[in-house]
Length: 458
Ligand SMILES: Cc1cc2nc3c(=O)[nH]c(=O)nc-3n(C[C@H](O)[C@H](O)[C@H](O)COP(=O)(O)OP(=O)(O)OC[C@H]3O[C@@H](n4cnc5c(N)ncnc54)[C@H](O)[C@@H]3O)c2cc1C
Image (spheres, rainbow, N blue to C red):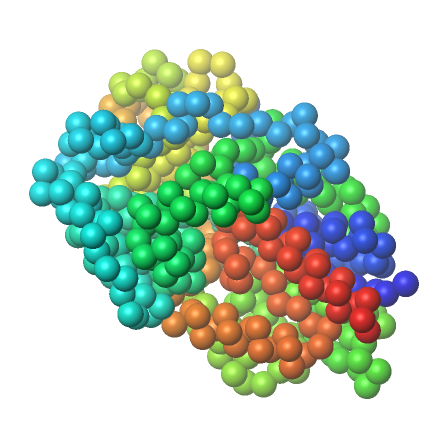
């Protein structure tokens, strides 16, 4: 039986291993941590359910429900409350619902009259010759105007990437948006025509996909996949080198016990780019490590706060709010966690996940020990909350989310070439093909197919 090693047990590694095991390969997953899940981390304390990593995913691919079903947790999968469709953006210290219909757009005070006219002109803007090299900020300003960039895209980019729109590549970070212009000549035109294509592929756009989680939080998903993998998954197993052998197989050297395992026909690496670089994992050329060190991961702090509902002055009727950079606040936005999914807070309490830092606030956490207090004070002011939180917990991700910055197209092409030149070695994980949980699961299917074809032909 062909042997496959999967390095890392985040959602990318777990899901890829699951599909390959199902295909009948002899799969071994090695993870340095004592728990599976990687960025997916659920904690429980004092009746609160805290997701320090992803709070939810978008069901953009049928592979998500398939995975849940095959792992026996379909009945544990939950979808966001209807009210979560309402998302607020902060402007001039007031919450404005992001308009979701033409009528709401016209009535909205989020954009000025001039800004709205500019947005409505989008179908008349021609295609750019160098969209390929543009940042999301350049792309959006050209197509929809500055105000849409500042009050819709800037906060949206914070919410997804904790990123800087002037740095993120439109082609790599928002490939579907880029494609709408490239293929259909514009966003409105593309959204109308692209719907048919998605229907054919049984895929959903990020606007229409349902938001999901699990009754016991996002870790219930990764734990269930890990359980299905059973003895194929080894935790607490950091490694230090992966070496190709003269017969074309790979051996893995582990760091803790100087153990060596050999005879792997394929190795799939799903570790973060900076970890591969730090470990100097493969005997690869310098360019490989240069490309890895060029992938920037900003720091993000997640502050989770619980209050008695009586303390809160604003109606909790949405997903939460995002803050445009121009509003100059000490945090990026907050998710109203207990409004979106049941079971996130004790009876009569409400819980919130507040995001701080990101690519525009490089160095924020160095020597800034008072940040949690400042953030909670500002958050409470905006939410008209009286008194202190009843519950608080936080986690600092020193390297949170890879940024697909301008020039990333070359990085992506490089990794494609690297795989071609290093038969049997596959580089996966959230720095290739999308950072969301949905994208990681979608890619797990693609990677498993690629590996399976390679192994069958080997
Ligand atoms: C704060 C935060 C909020 C997010 N919110 C959302 C959200 O709401 N929705 C959404 O869709 N996405 C969200 N994301 C993104 C998404 O969660 C991640 O992109 C995704 O989970 C990454 O999965 P991965 O398996 O590719 O990588 P990782 O989860 O990073 O997994 C890599 C694994 O490799 C392991 N590893 C590292 N070094 C070694 C070693 N030497 N030996 C063995 N194993 C090793 C790690 O321990 C880890 O388990 C968020 C991410 C963060 C950080």
